[in-house]
Structures are given as C-alpha cells and as structure tokens.
Length: 176
Image (cartoon, rainbow, N blue to C red; front, side):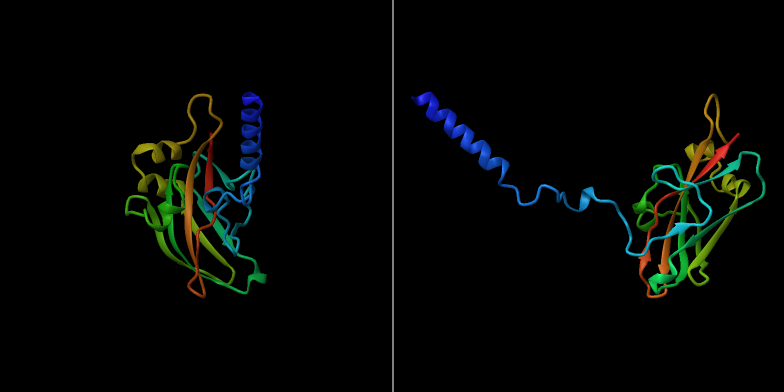
C-alpha cells in the first residue's frame, strides 16, 4: 500500500513537472540567430551554409572588392562602413563593435552610395597588415592536403538614420 502511494505521488510529480513550463520553444536571446532588422548581403558572394565567401588564388596581386548591399525596400541607405576588422574565422560581432584594435582594424569609414558600400583591398595589403600569426598563415594559402585556407572579415555598417548593423562574417577563401 505504501509503495503504490509512493509510485502514484512520483508519477503525479513527473506529470506536473512535464507540463509546468511556460513555453518549451522559447529559449531566450542566447539561442537565436543574430539577424539584423535590415539584412546586409554581399554581392557575388558564394555560400554553402552560414558564412558567405569569395575565393582568390594565393598568388593573386589584384584588388579584391566586397560590395555590401541592403534592400531598397528597407527605406534606408548606407551612410558608411564604419569599421572593417579582419583575422581568423574566430572573429565575431563583439570584435567589430567593442574589441576592435589597431592590430585587427583593416580600415575605418568607407562612404556608402545609396544602398551599397564597397570595401576594396588586396592579398599583398592584407599580408602587410597581418605580418605574423594565424591570420598571416591563413593569408599565405593552404598547406599540406588542405584545399583552401580562410581569412575572415567583419563589418560595422552605419545607416543614414545612425542605426548600426553588424552583418554576418564574410570569408576570403584562399586557394592554391
């Protein structure tokens, strides 16, 4: 008798615990994607999954341009790319907003033109900016059996109403 009362009590507690949550599908701000209200896309970039990328040869000496674009339907224009930060793929939104240093800032304040803004650099310029470390290793291209190495960029975009947006990370794939 005591055992069946105990079993019924435990079963009741289990049922109450299962149905006591307010909303099982709401995990809060830390488990959702960081998607800005106005999306920023990279013209001509390729993507398989999350991070869009451009591919260049490790022997390339020509300019590399990244054009950032917001939808015309947003009613906003890009005032400027306020900051461009580069490094390994470990950089993130905090790097460009609060962790930008002279060591990882590639360029500041690039004027926008309507709904687009273009950042231009080259592999030799990036190698000069990052002469040592993991970022330089990535810029020198793949080694061994690797098919490419990756260098990452993060942008801080300021719109005409002073709203700032941090788009998804952009990667530069360096092929042999």
